[in-house]
Length: 305
Image (cartoon, rainbow, N blue to C red; front, side, top):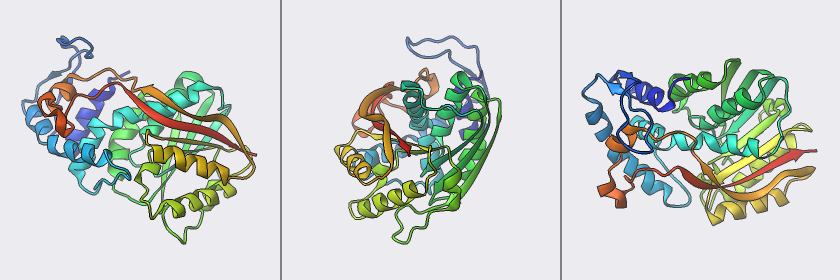
């Protein structure tokens, strides 16, 4: 299995038209850092230094609720993929591993609401590969208003999925505005075995909260009996309040795993190039501090009766 960060670095720099060459097998010099890759391309320092201000922009946006980030900027997306995407892989794996809730065999139909670059699909694939290898096909549908992540999904996320999961999979994207007052639920919702809402509530404005909640209720009402709905989001009080209000509005619902706040490890080893060349401890007040391995998330697992 190839190092996830090595794959991320090579694919993201390729997207930025500055291909680098990494070879695993160097000597790690820092405690807690994974085995350092050898880099034959001298411009890696320049490439990562150029993304620092974009990391700061994202960090400043994430400090506020609701979160608003300009993902139309490809350099913002690149900075996100290197500094945040790796930490969003493991939450779904952690939640699925808390309790046996997924007993699908053969084919799994999964939907992601506001999935973005789909780190959740990587985590789900990891879980299936390690614990549910009877699943031979994963059919993925992304319901997202933006198409800006299509390239990252194809060129970065899909190779990471293959790094874990050796079965067949598909990814279909259906443009969906979850904050549209005239929202109509797509019929494909009915075929899903599992639907995942991760790190999307935090993007809801005060004005859009009611609309978003009502649209999630519409989606819930269209789900087939036996469908699992997983919600995972950041540690904001507003997230807790939203989930509590939402669940009170759902009919024919069983809580398979009750709402809880868990500290979830990223599960990936730290990467030398990310820790030493993208982050800058001297600019910690700007958000360029090296990332820790644990983050708190609200999560709940629901079953449609």
